[in-house]
Length: 436
Ligand SMILES: NC(=O)c1ccc[n+]([C@@H]2O[C@H](COP(=O)([O-])OP(=O)(O)OC[C@H]3O[C@@H](n4cnc5c(N)ncnc54)[C@H](O)[C@@H]3O)[C@@H](O)[C@H]2O)c1
Image (tube, protein in one colour):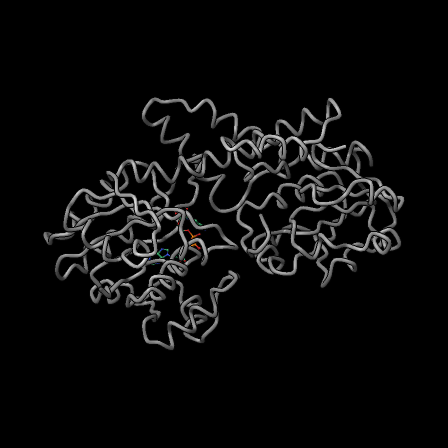
């Protein structure tokens, strides 16, 4: 049955959640405090780059199932189910900052005009549902329930992930709330996607466990890659060799420039901090984090080993600025760390990213970078190409042209996407990550 749903926080997660819930037949109003975001959406555009999302937004707006507002209070009053999808950024001491979640809880409480449920879609530390309950109870006597429904979508593939989920995790402690959530996710259940109900704390922790496990795989492979560099082995062959083991599986086994983005770094840190709060030390996650910090600047070490520690007068061209392909999200992008190091060593930076460039520029106004309109222009008179994000257009570079354009000959393949012998056959020097 169609439900009246409000989304509070129309960012990457809120907008995808709202649009996809409208797509399966619900009546959804997406709200946000950002007037700019809502104006863009009301004008029929999309504030983020996410393949397939704009088409779906337009279709559902046309069908009358999806609308947008800056009036968060009214969106809550008019709905029965309120999904909170606000940010939970890394706080000053690495814990999850719950400021926005608490703000939404207060607004939710102040606008309760009958039974409603607060569905937490943000990634939050175990126990946050209790914090939400307390905030809501401090402003209302009305009946409500708090639900944990963590989101597992991947930027760049978010629409598909939401509409065809591996699983939906729902933490509830009341039958009434469970029944409502079954109705919300009924279109997914009918298609055979697993809807897993559990207690609220376990649901909250499931999200951190998932991201921490994925980050662990990445740091593990980055360590194997470092050892490959010492002993002369090839980490891409090893990934194949272990990935075919059905107990391990082939995904998330790519060594590279370190994990980044708006989730893994903050979620690993937040889980470590939650543990500390409960007198528990996450030994593995501390190591995962340390390896990643080092990995983010490892490619700079590879450059200085060849070009020298003083990079004054050298031009380094970064191809890719987003933390991964198919997104314009540059939060915690490894490119930032590399650029800072390279600038500190005196290098001149050229950069190109067709989709994320504008965001990167906005987020890093203090960096002295020359941006270009295409990758070949960016490579002109460059001493070194540093591949950071494996966008498809970079996979198909014409290395004859690259050789002609560059003044130097160093190719640092931060994502192991090139064929080393092909590049060497063009008279260029190839350096990968754990690959000879
Ligand atoms: N981005 C991802 O890939 C992803 C995936 C899974 C889970 N998550 C989690 O989902 C949550 C949201 O992440 P995001 O990337 O969508 O964040 P985001 O920054 O893109 O969006 C958050 C939105 O909330 C709005 N907001 C803040 N305070 C508000 C308030 N009081 N009322 C209304 N709107 C308010 C902001 O203006 C912003 O548009 C985080 O907890 C994140 O960890 C993110």
